Structures are given as structure tokens and as C-alpha cells.
Length: 287
Image 1: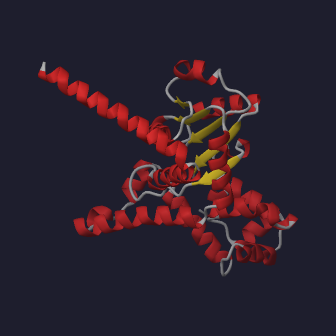
Image 2: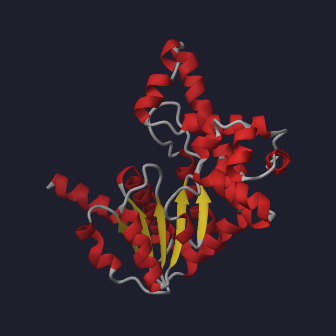
């Protein structure tokens, strides 16, 4: 997403470009429908500077930059508005399947194209070195947190806790948080309010906070130690989870490859317990 690109490059921008970038990040919906003259007057930056800003982001000019913003706004419509505006219902089932599949492939490609490998490696090392790992997800992100934990528990000899549900569901677990721990938060629009409380607790204890989200508009963005942006566009309804599921698999595989001995021990132990359990279950059924 354009917001992700701007956020990742702000540190290297000139003061003028940073000024433009900050306004775009806060008022993207307005910028997408302003003329270059209106935008120039609004933030008191020359039109030439706005053109240079657009070219800095690899656009041919301001109009192409603005059209990209308009397209991203369309993609971020509410599920109801998005469903009303789609023309997929007029297509054949083959065309529907093709466009829906292509959209998910694009989500994964966009995520991987903009992925900062150094960020991934820092998160992988943070997971490995954490005394205790917490993975947090609410609403639609809860099953992603559960999937992440299930995969990590298969290959790691580490205590991992799920943070989800109501406050009383996870209070006792999060109360054990120490500075040597790490917390992974998965949240997509509409960002749940519960993650704000979790992030405040993480910062208070000095633990590491790793964030999986869609853009710098996420309220946890500035609080996280490391952030992975996941492209989540859908043609219908709310969020796509394809890119997050793909990244979870990549991170789990990298952790396994970094410590094969531990991974193999964990897989073997789980396999032995499963075999015993199924054998015992078979004997109970026969009796």
C-alpha cells in the first residue's frame, strides 16, 4: 500500500517531503480528491515540490499519485459499501473465481515485494530468544493467533500464551509479562480496542512488541518495535488473511531451519504422544 511505502521512506526524506508525507498519512481521503493547486495552497508547499514528492515515490507525476490514493480508498470501503459497488455479481462464475483468486495472489505478492527482510529476521530472533511468547488477536484475528501458536508449538520448546477474548480471559496470563518476553499482535481494520490495552502493558514492562497489520494507520504502529505490513485487500467483505497466513508459515519455517535439533525433538515428541493417544483411543472403543 502507498501508506506503507511513505511510512518506510519518511526517515530518508527532506523536511519538505516529510511535511507532505505526514499530511498524506493523516488525511489520505482528502488528498485523493484535491487538485495539485488546492493541495499546494492547503499545506503551503509549491506545486513543483508536490510533483517531486510523487516522483520520489516512483510515480510519473502528481495525478498518478492521486489516482493510486483513490484506488486504495476504494479498496478500504466498508464491507457493505464494497459489496454494493462490486461488479462481480454480473460476471460468470469462471470470471468470478479468476478475479477472486488473482486478488489473493496480488495480496501475497504485494506483501512479499514490500517486505523488509531485516524486520523478519529481527522478529524471528526475537521469538527464539524470548523467555515467554504471547500472541494476541481479537475478533477475526483470533484464529490467526491460534494458528501461529499451533505451528510454533510444533517446532519449539517454549511456553506460548494466547491473548484473546475479554479482558478477564487473559488478565492472569498477561500479568506474568516480563521485560525478557515478546508479544506478537495481529490486528487489521477495524482495529480492536483491546489491542491498545495489551500494547500499553507491553510498553510498561519493557517487553518486545511485534506487529502484523495492514498499514501505518494502525494505532499500534508507533508503539511496536518491529512491524510487518500485510496486504489485505478484498473485492467483497472486509479483510483478506492470505498474506498473514503466508507470513506465519514463512516465519515458522525459518525458526525451524535456524534450530533443526530443537524442531526435530519437538516434532518427534508430539508425534509419539499423538500415536499413543490414538492407540489408547482405539483400545477404549474396542472395550
